[in-house]
Length: 208
Image (tube, rainbow, N blue to C red; front, side, top):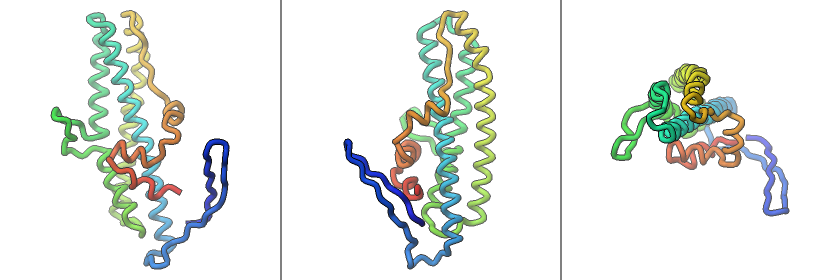
């Protein structure tokens, strides 16, 4: 709800204007309740972005590790395999893993719990329930824990890279948030939703 500025660009032509979004007059929910729903939805939207970055960062490191192992062959440091195993464990805590048949397993990890909560919040225009607020607190706590585990792994990179360089290999480099944001710029929240949940609509419904 409120007044928003828009910019439409096609080639060298640009059109600007303002649009006012108003609540459905038939809505039984108060402005305060709708604001509470919007606040939680947008918080989850940002947290989904943070989770997506972490998952992409770990996946990129895993890709680099596989490339180093292929290039070095038998000269690959043993510590590299141990590091890869730790990455795998953490990645499985972030999202349900794929099965050998290419299907996503039925387990629920952080991605699934966060996505389920997000879908429930955006599907209802009223104030989020006390249980939804508690689930949100739980996923925030879990995400903080996973972030700490990721940071511990990244702290090991210096030692891993030293072993790689001694073996004649190229150092591993974790992508940073600024580079990731630049790469993702313009993809929009609907694109993130499609990547994670196969949903191109759910995230776009609350972006103002």
